[in-house]
Length: 160
Image (cartoon, rainbow, N blue to C red; front, side):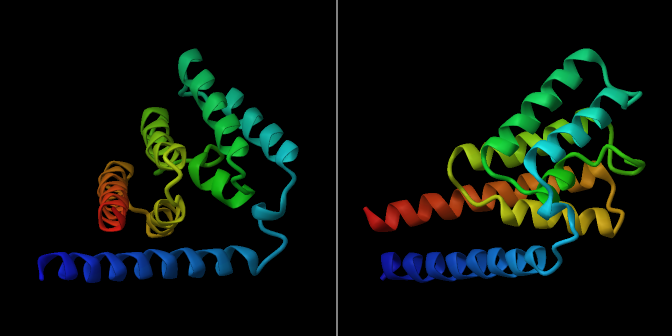
């Protein structure tokens, strides 16, 4: 009985995550003039220039940002996803470099585990549109990441 209840919960979480991913994908693909349609080299160049020009970053933070950018592009992230993680131009209210790096690390941690990044990126974009403070957004991302990892663990356990 308990295992059946767990499988039902897992199915509901999976359906929710797939629905969120689908909705996000549809929204991103609706407009070809968005940063999502940019060439990866163009994205790399634009974001790298912004990293170099950011007045509040030290050398180590710049290097980590560049490494995260390469990692994101290597995982096939599009322009809109990259710009959500690297809000450098006019980044007032989006947190300091340390907070941006922490958010990038949370998303890349999921990507490295082959888990969906879309729910995290959706939370980031929604939070920024609503002017949610960076420290509060960091907390929400941590919870979202934990939920995704927990759902994955439950799915793997149910399959075994």
